[in-house]
Figure: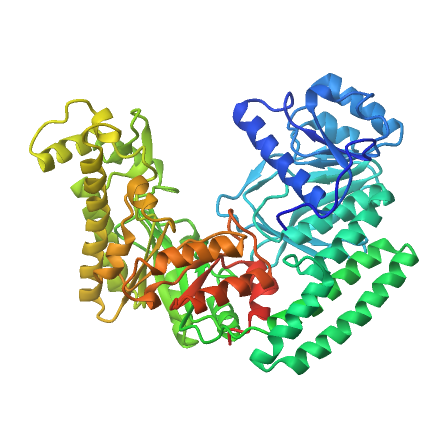
Length: 635
């Protein structure tokens, strides 16, 4: 939900969010602490929970007057004076919720022993938090989150207990995620903005409610309103009216009527729970209502007719690493037709490659790409090799050093090195094509999907090699570099030249892929706003489609707003000769958007009505698999 459901009073708020300022070691950490605080601030505002935000340096006995719970959103190392304030606060009966601190004194105050920092760059070890039965009344059983690092804690006191453990991608229990003591709760990481937002909000409510029962009434009202409006309508009456008006079009009137009848009974039960002041139970019952209304609303859609119903797999290992058969069976069950598997970068491959450095996951899971293609084809799925172009994330330092010495990395307009291959360097063009040739020879993939097929921004690339090659193209010298190319007399010529460098790789990949595997599909993930993406990142994608270099394009139309999504679609179909070659990306769990079932269905339907040939959902994860796909009716 984009807007707050209830006004939040700043006076006598029982909850304070302590924003890390003095407790952070540098500007970068301070900015991160600010972003985490804003996230939790927004979530609590949506839930109608009265709270204030107080920076480290303002924390005092006075600012904590009347406060029952202080939430340390990310405060790595507290000054002694601040720790003393918190100690006095807890002695007066105040309680704490602490996220991912590195302060052993704070841990001791909480009755905990702080462990050492642990990291998992692949984000496979800590993928969800599983709560023990009845450990947190009113809270979720599971919260999905992929954390790349944690700092474990263990109780010092006998009355301290672990209330939730991390589980890995295979469902195996790992380190503690949440620990409770008499002073409050401690999480071994922070809550990330990577999906499963509602369960994270429910978790916050349950934590605060366990420490201050006064938060429950507002939380119960917010949960009910979210359910009754499906997060997209203004009232329950509007929700019911829309469902009833849509149902006859899809022959689902009887099904919708039954679901609405069940919803009315649930609403009556909610009334009884609130009258009895059983607010935690009311929050749980609101989830039942949400599910009933979601099913009723989903029944009024018919989106299974889309030719291509795809999903991006950003991690490249499926839902269950090491078990692509299970992943593919699940996707086929839910009506997915195409899977885009992220396995190829300029600096690493998620398969046994002789051209590129091999990612560490290959030592653990064997050949993930081979398993994906084999099991996908067994289920009738089309498997697309997702190829990241130019961007060197995850490349080993030895490769980076070699590229740096050879002058093959991009430079910004202010001379800073960028961890991207320079597209105009002939060795880089050869490097990208060689890796694809190898993959096409080894694996019978159904498609090649180009991502990051662009420059990082208008600020790149302005390396000395680009200057030389651009001057050869012009047939003369550039007077002032990079000023004339960036904003001066040669700006338009340089923009066209940059576009030509990107398009050259698209054209070459199209030719070599079709030669290696006739019938293969070529596609690209692109920025949706054109021509701004042409001028900024040299992504002239309408030409790629209309010239036949790629078979379809997937603009990443990540937005929470249906009007904005439709505006993008309308502008995009106007650029193409064939509307069906547009397959928009829908940001179900993207950084830019978080969509529930209703909003996802609305965007799929809008794409269908605009004549798009399909859609691709971002991203293949537990939230998409369990909370979204079962309701879409794609099968």
